[in-house]
Length: 46
Image (cartoon, rainbow, N blue to C red; front, top):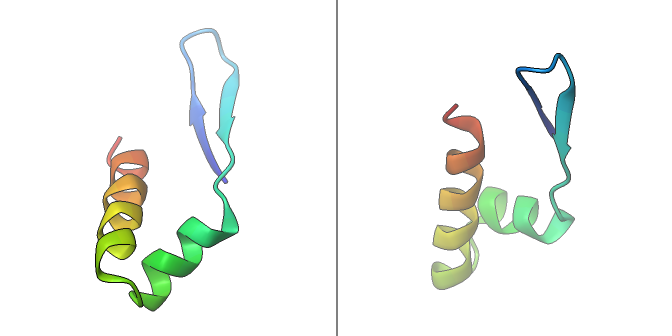
């Protein structure tokens, strides 16, 4: 899960499905792996 602080002092928690993690880590499906990696990168890029 990824937490981001908000301007009101609260944190937002984003749950991430296990399948997204697996596709990103395993890189076993050309189409789905790219989508999963882009999604994770978008969440962690600030």
